[in-house]
Length: 227
Image 1 (cartoon, rainbow, N blue to C red):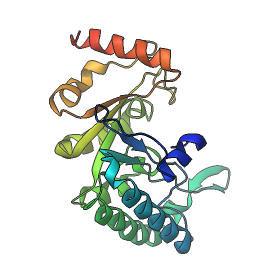
Image 2: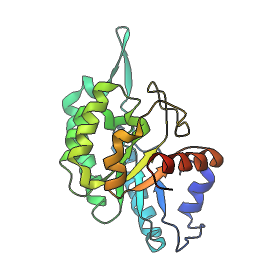
Image 3: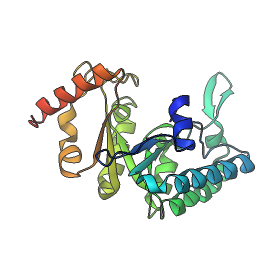
């Protein structure tokens, strides 16, 4: 829904829901649990509730959400995050806001993706305490955050395995998030075989344009013997 045209189609329910297609929406990445303005956060939650209710008859299977990014701050020649400097303040705020998302997920299919603030250790600790939120595991993101963070996030996903309902597939060279066609980077997708084949999640080939996505799908099927 970062695409402005698709965004307004969904907001105004102008799209056609086919009985043969499962609808999964990626919510706009303008949302953030890190913003200081409480009224802005509440307004966005109200917006999400209206969106979910308006589309409930469309039988949307999943809404994936990013938690947003903590604000960086120049600090004596280095970049630090405001949420780290004022740790206790943000810890309390994040716990309350993620709880609100968890309550939303009791009635609507909402999944948090491993992006942005998810990479913070404290955020994952809070997410472990939730009961209703589901998770979207983006393998490309896992492979571009560095080995230490990857190890921690894999441990998180193994613990929350039963709540992984969506997996995003795309390739990269393990240095940054590139969204390359599968096979054009250095990711060993077999490391995630148990998640991909045994969790029965929705699989999203998150590659553009369409012809690269279709080629990636064929490569993926060949890799896992699904042809």
